Image (cartoon, rainbow, N blue to C red):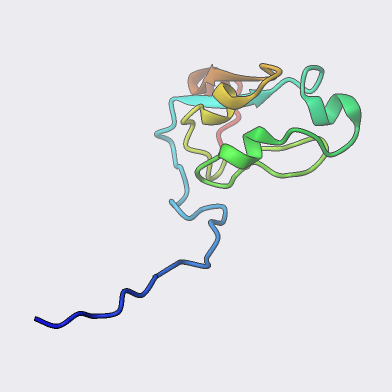
Length: 103
């Protein structure tokens, strides 16, 4: 047996909103940002953005204030877990359906 060169294979692609597809009506929990506690919103400047960094579906914007694209958000809660200011809470989706707002 001979030896072969080991070549590295790397992906240069970046995830984009909706890579996992639209959420539809199956999401159980929805992340809601409390802008009075959110670090970028309070400072009025780019800061923190751990919610943006850790979102596996890339649906959190890196804007001041951050926003969430609920059409593609799966409701996994990672953003809420990673937020150091505890500005993101997971709210039951049914409460929004009762208000007539379905995303």
